[in-house]
Image (cartoon, rainbow, N blue to C red; front, top):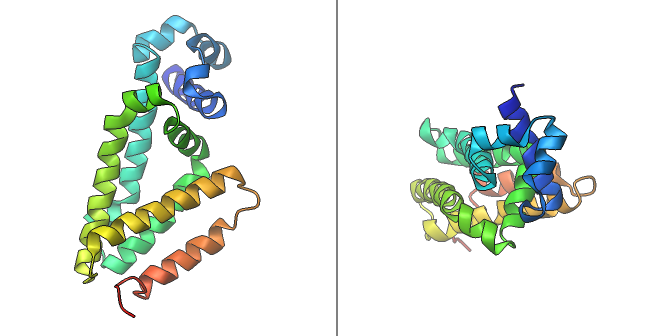
Length: 186
């Protein structure tokens, strides 16, 4: 791993554990075993470091949406998106902890709002397209509901990962959406 990657991983871990505003770059440098100047050379400042973390995370979110771009069957694309989302939550728990914490830190939320808002809009738009293809009565609302479900499940899992039944919930959610229990039918 390069120094740049070590800095990024260390910052992500510390931001997720302590909060962005309570983590000085001096601590990141010390724990990454690099000089503070190297952080500034690679990322400009602490805000630039946060932007880089979000950019990497947004790229991984984009990967979870690849089934939509490949023209997969909408039901299968949604199921793959759910699987990939939960795989990413398991593998990148620190990133999702940071994202959820940022919602409660106004200064951080403002600096990252544009980046986060952009990928949230992309996800919602892709989901809306899939529900439209499936003939959902209210595709935008269905997309927002699934997005909110995944977000809420993520938060529940992050609070108690060892006790939360993520696999069972994933299976339940996939079954729900593969069997069309969302089309506004009685």
